Length: 84
Image (cartoon, rainbow, N blue to C red; front, side, top):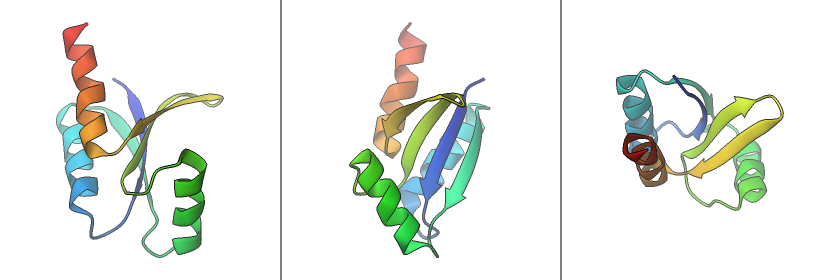
């Protein structure tokens, strides 16, 4: 089982799809909802250089997280495991 962090907005279909995908594969995740926090959302977007949501990270340890990207990036990221 892997651990992920997702920065999401409420009315985002790709956010919902990412959550559904992680649930179906029984990966754990923490969802950080930023619909009511435009300043926080802007900060996260700038930090990772990513303009859309979801913004997905794999949580490795407190000192190490891997930036995954958005929903389609998550699908590709998870497929790498299937092929290894």
